[in-house]
Length: 186
Length: 292
Image 1 (cartoon, rainbow over the protein chains, first blue to last red):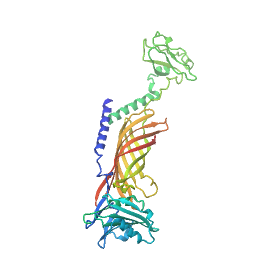
Image 2 (image 1 turned 180 degrees about the horizontal axis):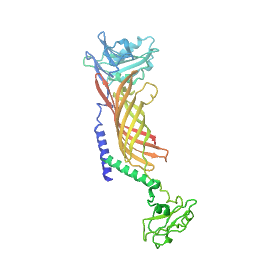
Image 3 (image 1 turned 90 degrees about the vertical axis):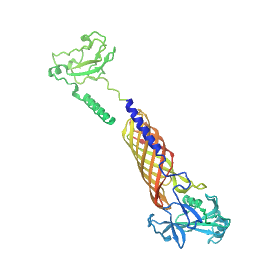
Image 4 (image 1 turned 180 degrees about the vertical axis):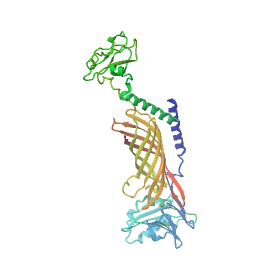
């Protein structure tokens, strides 16, 4: 009886040892910043952003990189995607003023004007300040626009997200925004 | 080797039990002697105590004198169902051994003799065989950050899961199969959340008790996880390792409820650009179960 018990105890301990040994199984600790995402750096190294790729796919349109999530008719493994296939999209545009000024300029150009009470200030992971706001353009078109300071006092970037659902509280878009930062080429 | 030995022991035990339970197991080969003795049974006799067979309606009780009594015919009450005995064939008195006999033969000539009281149910411990489990744990929502976070850490993603647990081996050691479906908290049935389907194997030990059976087990398994990211279903892999420690509480013959605290290592594997990567967490989990 003791022999059998010993055998079982040894078996269980072996299993536990294997389990403990496999605790490291997996590449990235989920508590690490931006776990599982891809760092994208622009061709001119003026900025970088983290995104899930897929479903995000960077495409080049007239020399500018646009990020899109293709709609359901396009495979996520597709190598050729156009902006017209986008379910979600992100345009990154450099501005020659700081983030607050760029935000103000953008707000004054909107028709109808934004509800500025919904704007939010943010701090990106690299310490840059920013402002973002969300609004609805139509029944199936929603936007979220963030302005983040660049590497110099008179530079910033505009991040314009477009999607079919409200984007204000989207935690995935928030991660992309705070992961954004100016690059060495800015 | 041990399993083979266990199977042999089981077969031997089963054969012995079947033999003991067979109605004719005490048959006497000699027909003449059999007619004289009719029913014969064996009762255990404790030292220095009288053995009393439980009375059965319609049959006289049988008392056996203390073992210390003189080995005479009086040792057996002579009124042992003489009515049913064939005429002219007296009941055969059987005397006990002179001292501390371990067994006494009681002879009756009528139909079923009042045997010894039915043995008490074996106080064997109870172990689970099949059940349904509910587990709660927290994973991470890859690609998402909780509002207000400035660190970029992935947002916590609570998961609930239901499992069908089957234990083909459930003795001191228990080996289980668990088919599990888990869903993102708050997204059940919406079609907009993450979920997974996984098959796991478990191996552990338990101490079977009549009411409470504590256990500890390790488990490992894997399956499919659907990630819902930007309105797209992204197929990914899911696997997990973990240990559970808890107890099953048996409610008579109805079944059991169980509770276990676990330490879980869920992993989500997926394609990142063109390579495969995986994200894991280490987290506590709570599992509740019911079953038979």
